[in-house]
Image (tube, rainbow, N blue to C red; front, side, top):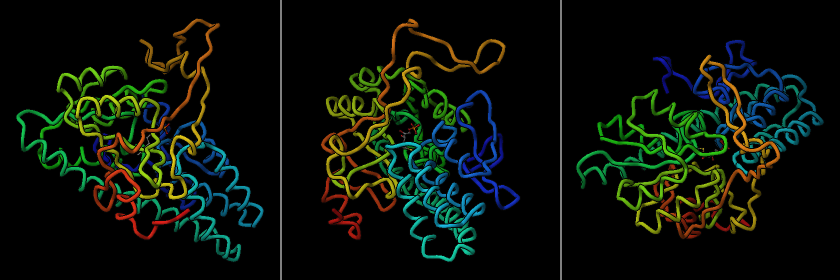
Length: 365
Ligand code: MRU
């Protein structure tokens, strides 16, 4: 996507052919710092401290983290250590394990001398595949938006949660890809952007994406969505996911479940956009089996913003003695999901629906 007229991906190889460039997303929307990662440990820090975030981008960064390690030390010991260090960064997004398994499966059988080149090539391919997958998600998802546009006057009002935009993937985004493609086709859309406390990925990142692309939008507090749905002001919800189970349960940013409940109660279609690497075919019960990241309580008791002197700073919003509790994700049961927008088409959120769309994975235990 373009930023000030310049095309960007969220991760790319530096001109030295070795370092990996990312955008430090903790500074957005106030600053747009590009950061060079030159070691596997830096890639791990970038994921852990959320300079990069979003399930597909976490996977892509981990893949490049493995490549950085192979360039420094391609031994079996270093390969195993890189896998362990990168895997320990964040627990919920399955794309992390998917990318690491893919890289290790490729690299382990190779002689050490061939590993660095193969690792960079595969990391680049993972990024390119992610871009193509998300472009296709947009092609399938835009049909939903076009169908609503055809039967109403005025904009199609789409609610989204967190940031499942191009910043969360390599490009296009998952939930935002249908929106970008709708805008490109001249469809009138308006986006309700959930602020997404505690880290405000909606306010900081999705709103920035929408504003950068001139897409009509409003930022809303997380509790406003149900009210807007009751009043007929939401035509469609589209969110992303960090891990979707083989039976269609959707784990995503905390608060997604409440939006799905409100959508179910009010009859608003609730779609989840997901690339197939976000499906965990080994998991069949999201509530019981998906590890939910517990983050630091001070993300709840404090907020980041820009002060009048244009300094990006953190302020305390709760009493000093009040601890924050901070589960970062929740699970929306498949029964509340209208459909799963994948790169192959829109699947019912069910074991049968996903197995029919991805028969090569059906029956994985
Ligand atoms: O904690 P984050 O910012 O990594 O959470 C991101 C989300 O919850 C996204 O909705 C999800 O990763 C899908 S991104 C296409």
